[in-house]
Length: 638
Image 1: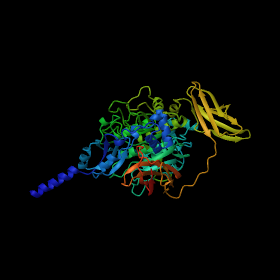
Image 2: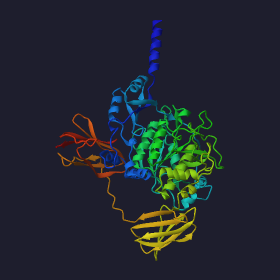
Image 3: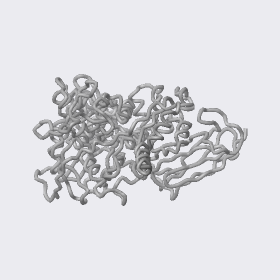
Image 4: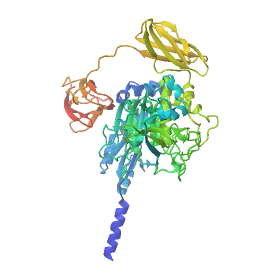
């Protein structure tokens, strides 16, 4: 009897402690950063400005329209002191999110209770897992397109979405950066070989490879390859994506190995990274419901939804699949599609009928969802089974990149628009905008109508041909109200352009100026401008051969000292100053560089993170990247 009691006791202890689960640990405040000044010109403002790209700063400014509002409470870092106290309980931190003021970590039940009792902890909530809905695929190899178009079998989805007319006008997403979060991306596929990727990162294994690796499941990068090709693929005669001229930032966030749950914290980490790089649009064909209830789909509860809405408020057009849950017990949209600002995308077939799987609304708080629908049945895309294999697939995973691609097209012809204005254009021109419902939302998207919503549209670039008379410059323009005038401003001269064919205007210049600006004014006196620069590009320097952080100069120093940084490849970089006790006193750099850098100047003025002058003494400057670490000894003399 005694041994039986012992066995029961052992079982109950192991059961109560249980297998560690991943949780969000949310803090009550930002600790010592709580009252830091974010006034323009303050030390912290400048630090935050340095932590993001110039493009990210400009995108935020375009949205808030006031430099004093570019940074807010969400941008303040999570207080390291809180993180260290959590670590002292034997907890290994997984993800740190400044936007959520939280960290994620694996905790057993005992650790959960200990963490909850910390005075600075607001709540401890499970990290949600993916809905893991399955899209339907049918592989095929292409020998000859059925339709005699360069689009091949992708012609239907391009035409159905009202995008073909935009492509004819050379509106293809040029100079727009789209961030994609998915399972991985096989860039060796022929339809992706010409895709311009500015940065990529694997948030599962923490490296810069988003294609399959040895530790991945064999079909890990299948889903991401497919969605990327629908949005930005390009292979004449086989597949043309919705925005084939866009540039991309790729994040591998979803681990499909059966023993590994797909969790939301990687998504949160990835979108904060994408924000810092300056992406304009995010396409996310993912959804999370495990640990959540329908009551949580209120746009304000799910952690991933909060992060998505914060990104939208910072100027990123966040587009997410509504989910494939209509025929399940769940039925409704999945996080983060429940977001107040997120554009949730449902699916229809080629006859415009709602797909049998497409998740429905409303959100728990009564808002209409999805926002819009796009073709999501038998969408054509690339399969990584081989370099020239393609697939038909169905799911809101496929309708999502179509709408995200349309957002990129809108921004490429109207770069001045905010995320909210892009959403207005997409929703208010959809097929049911006058009577939205919880099946279709505002209706089926139309790319051309959405692009025209905020005024006349103009090509992403001029067509320029040289002749005996000089240079013929042509653009395509269109407006809902008709065109009043199209002209070139060159060297302070106004040169009228003439209509030469449908929507096409041309003029001849004797020579090309360094800056060419083309203006279009419609009959409502709304204007659009295309500017082309012809300055010769400076010769490109060769990347450095290795990582390097120079010794600071001068050293010793009094008021300021300079380090030089070399990076031979894109990389995340952290450069921080430590005192003799090993305490970090100043973060000089904490950001991702999307290309190599050579002799990049980093200045330290001898202050800490709060702008306070540090005392004389010996300090250490530490450089950390995923592939390289080094330390430099620094002497400060007051």
